[in-house]
Length: 170
Image (cartoon, rainbow, N blue to C red):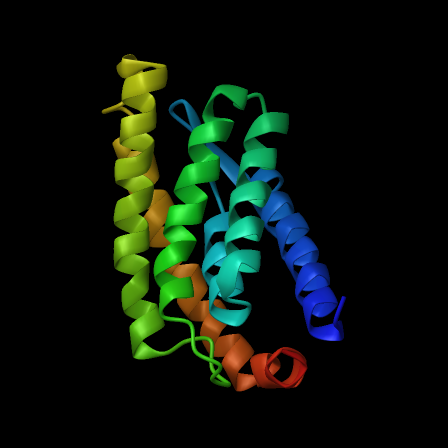
């Protein structure tokens, strides 16, 4: 195993744990679920790490949070949805020294649409009674995640964290 592969594995595990913690423990209950900070970190990991490791972190971190939060029925949907919200960032990933670019800021729009649409579909399958009730909460989740991603992106870019910790090591 190369140092590069090991480095990506370790970073992926760290980001998986961070997504889990920000989803599970930094959340506000709404309607039939919760709004959390985990998705903003999904955008960060996809912008910093890229590739399948970022998709893994997004999917597993989010699904584990659902599984231990009493929302096990949503864990399979979350696994898919979190992978899909990270995907636009991963597909546009470039080894630049910045997390926040005009493109990554705009990518929060399709990611937010995937969140709202994905959980609407999941609700239609799991419990139709919540499909429309959950839309406002999912919209708040999407917008809040975009705003937090932009704030964190500006902060991390000002501190040049991506360049210091990730670019030279990948």
